[in-house]
Amino acid sequence: MQLPAEAVTATVLIEVVRVSALPTRRDVPYPGTAVAHWTGSEAAAALALIESLPGSEQHRCGFSPGWSVRAYDDSLDLALFEAAFCFTCHEVRMQGTAVPPALATQFFDPGALPARTLLSLFRKAAADRLDERHASTW
Image (cartoon, rainbow, N blue to C red; front, side, top):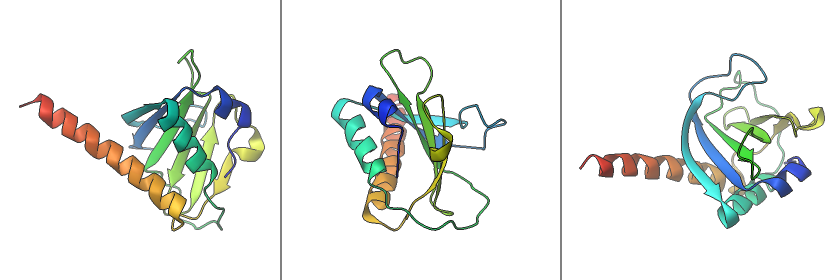
């Protein structure tokens, strides 16, 4: 999968979002709960993993992403890009100021090891967040 190279270089923080709905407009973030923030080597590893996703054919499901990642530079202002992943139709939709139109829609193989690893990281981040919330109520 291709990510915007300059944005990848500038990324200092990745926000992992558990998507709850589709955005109301194409240019707004996917609604959902931020379950993790990855910086440093963790963010770099996640970006490398995403870039290693092998391509696939499109499968029709209506695009119902479960997860997205938002990449931020050191200003932590607007996301450089957001990539929303649908593991059912094999589609990734990217948006943001750093995303050229050619990269806006891509397809990946959700059965490939990098995709399974990425999904495991997303799920672990959500589980860890849930554990933290429960621990704070004890």
